[in-house]
Amino acid sequence: MLAITAALAALLAAVAAHYGYHRDELYFIASGRHLAWGYPDQPPLVPLIARVMTAIAPHSLVVLRLPSALLLAPLVVVTSALTARELGGGRGVQALTAGLVATGALVLGTGHILSTETVNFAGWGVILWLVVRILRTGRQRMWLAVGAVTGVALLATDLPVFLLAGIVVGLLVVGPRDSFRTPWLYAGGAIALALWAPYLVWQAHHGWPELTIARNIANGGSGTSAPRWQLVPFQLLLLSPFFAPIAVAGLVRRLRAPQLRTWRALGVAWIVLAVVFLVTGGKPYYLGNMLPFLVACGAPPAHAWAQRSRRRTGLLIASFVLAAPSFAITLPLVPVGALHRTPIVAANYDAGEMVGWPAMTRQIAKVYATVPDHAGVAIVASNYGEAGAVDRYGPELGLPHAYGVQNAYWLWGPPPGSPPTLLAIGFDRARIAPLCGSLTLAAHLDNGHDVDDAEQGAPVWICTDLTRPIAGAWRSLRDYG
Image (cartoon, rainbow, N blue to C red):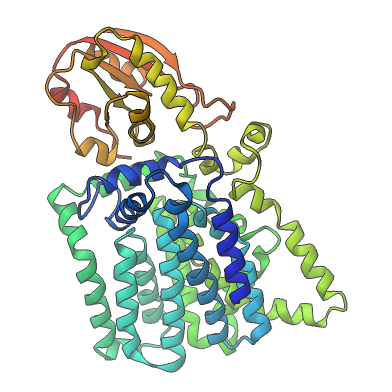
């Protein structure tokens, strides 16, 4: 397992400098300059990590992404193997579990960039391992550790609360119910709540913006949103289509196998989470955070089958070779100049979001330089990726700080005073025109690689003769999504 963990960490670190910043990473860096207990769309932990890593090396992608590799590789891979051991699997089963998880699309996709999902995925892995151990050993005091891990994970994203709720429902429905008769489960919950409380207070003070964002995500307002019907089928792609049957077998065994009766509540938890995310319109990868646990459950029969086969080594190698396309889809391995000739961006939205930010910022700078008296120009972006790119690359090009209307950027406020001209990035004409007495289309953004990402072709407007002060229009421009 240590060899698999080291290999995964080395791979993630090796590709960390490929392509460029993801739009979310640009946003985390900006949020790190405005440290708070919360933001409209996330708790404080990942912006804090971004703040620390950029302080160490201000413009290094490798350093920014290093925590993801160091966090995900050991916590997900090792806890998956440890979970398999708790379920009775020998060394072969543990190694198979670790290998399958390490090469899964979800692990690779979340491990090579800094994201809230990186911390969340690692947190779910540790929580599930601890709960499996509690159910095997009856050591109820370990609920304190579950609470602590959950509380830390909740400082990155709200999703761990769904996992804990699913586990509680599973225990209530099929047992064992011993945990409810001791104080430790409740004490663990109190620890998690105490760690999460500052963020909840922040959300309450700001009118619970994350609920608005969740509704927008459910309605397709995110680049990684998907129709509800795709939630369950999409799980087959988050591991690998060739290994997905092992996870399916894990779910079936968890619910039906007599030798796994002790942990049947976790199979029920998966069903509960599937229903909740279907109803609420959650993103498909939310449910995928349970895949390492399901693999640990399904690995024993797969390992036994391989052991019985005379060609087991060849079959195992062939299976991993067939799974290799997930590496190209989820990791930045294809040269960026050839990316537009592949289906990678269509299959993996995030791949396109790491392309072209410096080139697009240079185009914005060229437009900015054409505006007479451009010292009085305020740059206003329609989303946090555009604003984050201007803030990251703009100072080198003579651009001022950008203002944005999405999420935390909107909360940080409009340009001060009454700027005579706005350089409006990415807005539809109908959205920005009411604010402008004169509106000129100055350019369309081009990432320089013909990659069809969310910013390709976005308009750059010169807005003059404002019909009202930008501060008065700021609320109408807000985009929580």
